[in-house]
Length: 403
Image (cartoon, helix red, strand yellow):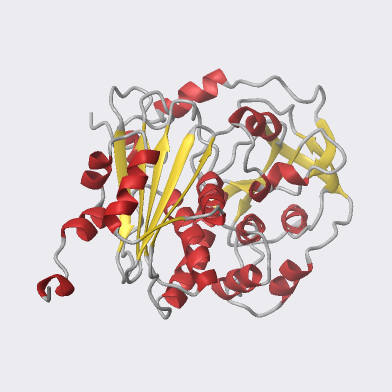
């Protein structure tokens, strides 16, 4: 079997032909959780948090997520605040979020249960709730490549919740006649967290013909929509006039971002060590990536939502500086990264790297020497795996013929 098959699939496409992802089965088995409540009733403060499933689409399970915890639980569903936390820490507080499930038709947003879900998604602060389940929540902590983990689940029988303090910007786009794309961009430009926009989009709060969107899909859709709009703005700016390298480390991941003078180009390459999430049985490091040139991509990135999450962070940096450039994001995933925690990890770590001080160089050779000093894997392997690095290092340019 191709060693890269797990990296290309990430538990969503079943490329190995098995009915269930063996990687996820292994993690789920090792992460069985004890019941968080002894009765069928759970009282606590939702961060606020919701989850919309995708199985059976368009008739899916949707509902709130809440922990048996009172007080300020907002950090539990705000990935923008998680940088620097360990995997153990994230799993610990996320497994406390119990998912309530109620079958809804995403195209027909009627009924009191749907109203509760939408009110929760519109909330600005934690909401006190009491949920009565049809049975005691049980199961395992749920792991996905795109979505942050959460705890066990159970079908909902009844919900009681206090009147939430509504997020005024999300309330505005809910009642205004705005298309979904316009609403996403307006919320972002007005300072709303990306994670809050994703939640609102998933709950069916955005757009003229409103419908719920599975949480997995909404995360990538929002990252892609915002990033694509910023890239179009970037193309009107002058080129970067230097070579820059940014880097950071987190959860046994090493991130290196190389920016260079060019028209817009972008690439994300990931190197998965053996015994990491998507290279669990491999004997060698597997490197895999996707890229785009000036005109963008016509097909969905094979490595999934992380591509769009990193692109958003890169585009934010260039737009802020009113510059256009090429950017290559290199990610080494070492064995300490033992389970998926969601693509927020990609977006927030690339953002963190780009907030740091850049090392600046006069040419690509000097920049690549520094990149080589940061990475554990020989730079030759990265170049062989990269379309943009090969293009910039070996492709003849017009100015070369003028010399």
